[in-house]
Length: 315
Image (cartoon, rainbow, N blue to C red; front, side):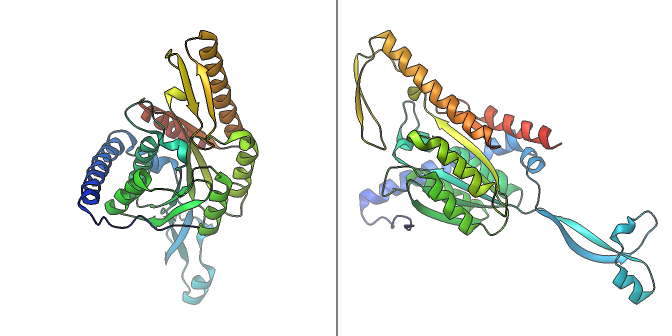
């Protein structure tokens, strides 16, 4: 069941918290705006095209016009050759599917994975709105928690960032398929879908990714799907800090590890790398573009690389 956003603050503590949130949202909005202007200007529009050509008007035929565009009905009625003029329908719908499950709140650096997701979503939203596209958001865990219909404008971007950062879900699990079911119901025309997740999907992640392809890319509307994988450095390697209790944020399972042993640290890193590489293979094998972002590192080169590769591929 979809819940509304949190209610307005009613106490002095809540008001102070709201002011802090607003300040962080504004700072992130400024940063995302700068990243769009400095790095993505022009690349977004060159990669994502409009849905097709719309009829604009009829005008008199001029030597050199494509005869295939002649409007024979108007030509027969007026006795003079006329052609149909079309313009590109540029406006797209961008839908951001943001995983806000419990594992997204983890961060071993200054920011959490959810904050990285909010920044990436802000950059994509600002790029889309700058090019007159609409942007919508679905926040999900093991159910859809919040849906923001596609919209435009700076206020809309700030709301997107605010909700991604501070919305409090009711549960902590992950069910991408359920979020995709909802996306298919609300998307009434072809859209560009960015799926932002850490892909902590457990043992069924291969089946989930297969269902993702089926639901979004083989649907009647054939949505364009791009996955953004969010990873934290501590998920890839462990420091030497002696005995360490590691808890799965989504299942609550706790494992004791002796990180003072190099063999334990190496086994942890090897398993983490294997999981990450398997996820990447499963995503790319199903024709879905993947952008891998690491928390605490400069992730913009990865996004720019995606735009460059997509532009080269599509000519």
